Amino acid sequence: MKFRFFGIACVGLALSLSACSTEVQDSESSEEALTTKATVLGTSTAAEAAAQFAPLYEAALGEFLANDKAKLVTVKWVSDNAQLGELGDITLEILAELGQKSAAPKTLKAASVKWAEKKLLAFQNSKKVIPDTASLKVQSVAFLLWDAVEVSNQINAFKRAENPTGIDLKTLPDLFAKVRANSTLDRHFYLPVKFNRVPTAAEVQRALIKGKVTLDSSGAKAIASFWSSGEGPQGDAAFKPLASIFNKNSISARYFFTASGDNWSRQILIVVDQHDQAYGVELGYSE
Image (cartoon, rainbow, N blue to C red):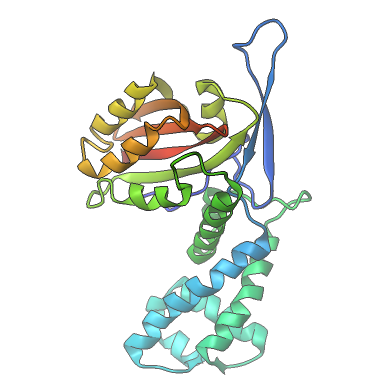
């Protein structure tokens, strides 16, 4: 299966829609332990995510309308098109909120922002934090809402992050998408997390990675090991641009983590830049 999310987790394994920070005790420091703080940059408010939902909804609905050459969305049209699935359910709910049995696509798009925000707000706790996208899936939240959160988180992460010398962070996901592009490997891009100092491998692991993994290597070797990993890039030349970026002097640390079991594996490369921001990529396999 393929990962659908592009966000990352806070240390408590929850990717929030509002600001998220945590403290990590560094057990490797001397007598008086230093406190490392990690702040997730890829977070969004419900309103921000809802704004990203509207164009996703419009595009998805537009495909079906184009196939049927329909210009008006009616309750009957939705009911007659079972293949719409959750998109049809969403549309019926929006029409109901409008108090109408039909509406133009642009009207539905505009109304979808309010609908999406209402849905997302329903998941917020007393601290106005919404569960991560994996949690949203478990709670049967529409995939389009899930996607909207991901898109919004990515936009905000790159707005808040500071580009290291010679690197445009917002280009990294697209470069990564080209690696083993024709494979069915799971893939995940870890959005930037800001630390208050250079984090250790253990601190990076706790702040960014869900699940148990093992540090395989660090430094330049980490990049080479990830690049050659069997259920990772496997030597794919498309990884070369990223390898060059991650080898720049503005990158201060590099960590390669792995994990595997029956019918699954994970290969994760995380780098830390001159601004103490950690981000990275993961490839793997699962059945």
